[in-house]
Image 1 (tube, rainbow, N blue to C red):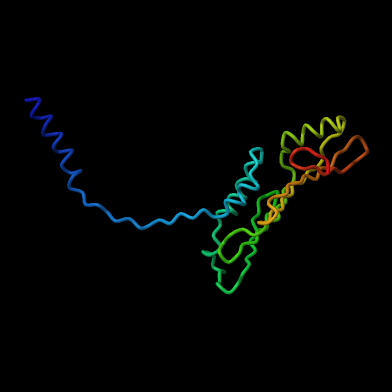
Image 2 (image 1 turned 90 degrees about the vertical axis):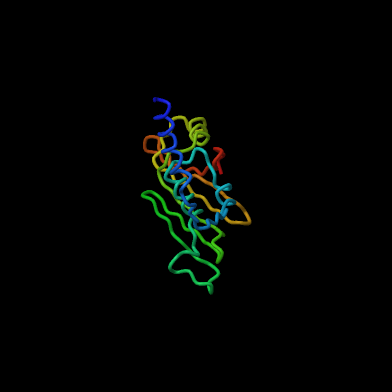
Length: 166
């Protein structure tokens, strides 16, 4: 008796699965846009808000924008976060041609912090500015402008992402 009930339950479960009609889904197109930009600006130590806005800019499709017209060759889009701004130039196909990025008072990368401590041991960071410029031809250039203070003295230092003084 138990076997008969078990067989009926299995038939009741399997039979409706076979009776379902296949549904035709819409076609999905995947485009690898702006991967060169993301590779050029990639930084594992970048704060999350900066990395998020860079990803958002790379995924932004200017061709889906309300202001898109085939007549224009260049589109400028500004992305803002609380302590930074990013201006991106896209071509008519939606590829990033160049960017100018400016972010203030985010945590400095370990290499930059270590270089500051080694070179300026008694100085405190008062302000910092992270600047990124990207172009398709030259790639990404990253620079930190740092304001240091020691008592009443103040100096400004420019460093690259590896902690080298410029």
